[in-house]
Image 1 (cartoon, rainbow, N blue to C red):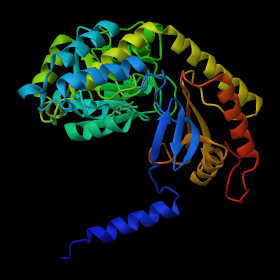
Image 2 (image 1 turned 60 degrees about the vertical axis):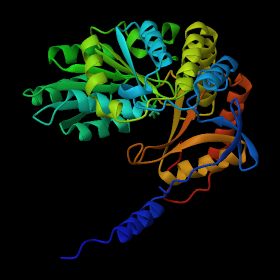
Image 3 (image 1 turned 120 degrees about the vertical axis):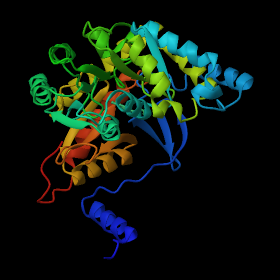
Image 4 (image 1 turned 90 degrees about the horizontal axis):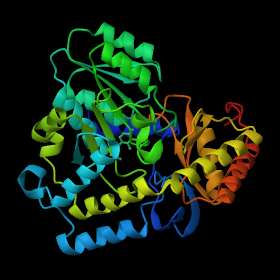
Length: 402
Ligand SMILES: *Cc1c(COP(=O)(O)O)cnc(C)c1O
């Protein structure tokens, strides 16, 4: 019996991606100044970052990182349980817990890793189940595989679907997991009804609010607080530091016993180098600004309204989103790529999102807004999208879009 040749397989997969227009490449950013990006010598206006509040280059945040790095160096030198846990990490954990009204917080190297940790540490292979929204982030889905338990998915935003899946798997321990703000759609999970479902079915409710923290709700406390919920209804939630907070890393917040268990046993927490303390110092400064500067959220809300008004006027099809994530559906990959390229020609960089990141037939432009944008920039972008759409070459197989 011959073993399959791995390189032949990779070659075939690459050919298939090419035929499906799903090849992905990286762009090289050579300089960045707020929402302006220099890409291969051309300055573009970016509508693609997750820096919603504009904190990643903010003076106080950068200064906090520089000061801490000058004192403590650039690395943490160890994993948290050996010698990598620094007072700055602890300070950031307490600040996050205080902001979001949770008893305890635990700092992770990234949101992806934090999601792996939560499920692996809490769920087991013996009949447990994780029930998830069909459009949850990839890291939540991969986490279930790592935990080795059953994965059951329900239709997007469908609490009754979640209830059915939990009822069908009534034997083992259960977790109900959802994005707060959905990363590719910008809409928000029905957290109140999902929390009732979780309570009814005795499932642990876990909300990944990577895109809601800092942006949604009073003082930017995210989707859980905005829904009037707290640790009693949502015993665990994830906040990332690399999105609205402009830095890097993530924090899991929760009930004392749950966080204590994670800190002692979660392999993706224990067996990796802790974040640089200077990075924690930067996030501490960013959280203080995110809590204080309501104007950043007010400005974002105005820009979202400007974008949606303009898009409606041009007959562009919007998704039901009030957040800074404003996708425009294109349908097939070719249309999304053609629109993305036309916008780049016009001086704009937007996310061109294709399967498998989104479902088949749902390729899109993922346009994101930042408090650093001006209303005139947003209006000009909408005009450019409409112009690009009106000038799409019309191959017979391409549906009108977006
Ligand atoms: C970005 C994202 C993550 C991963 O966070 P990182 O810190 O970038 O690894 C997890 N969940 C959701 C919903 C995200 O959008």
